[in-house]
Image (cartoon, rainbow, N blue to C red; front, side, top):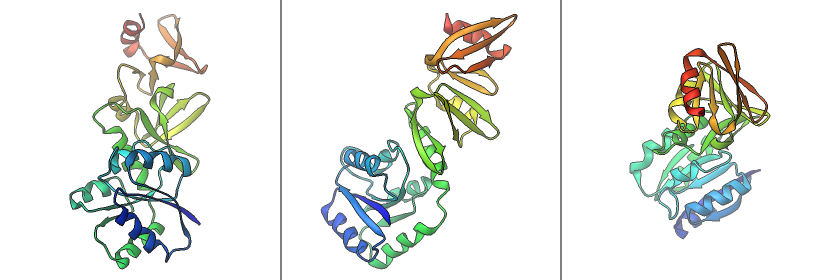
Length: 240
């Protein structure tokens, strides 16, 4: 069984999807909503496997909805506007149904659910981080799921090959972005690069300790991060 949510501001659109879903008993509808705000609430509540998502909705657009989700389901966009098709596939939607569509076209979209959608995380993370304002949430890997975490809860970021580890309290989560990418995208008023392998959240600094000509930063979660000489002056200037 796979849980399904329909988010579409048009009743006719929701009705058509429900009618087509009758051919797929393994797809169980758990909620339907008619606006972006309720879509966020219900998707975060039910953690569905699949969402049929309209793009132009009151409250939040379909793309905006994605940036507020705690976990990322499979997405099939269902819309009357073809100009969003490219962006839909840039965030790795399973498919893009252009209204009006036939039952055969609907079946093709559902059949694609069995395809590998691993790239969903990478591109939706790009959507999260490429917003005009600095992101309030960051996409990370947790077990086999992709979840979003609050940027404010990050204590520090550690380089991990081509990826990064985000340290939150006593846990570490993997981000698909490298540390230099995250440095550019996280709010510089809160996050500071202190080493080629480390970025700290200034709000999480407990104390700055000097050892000879070197410094260590102790964070609120008890972890200690080394400060390299090239970043010392900037750190001392900010912390004073």
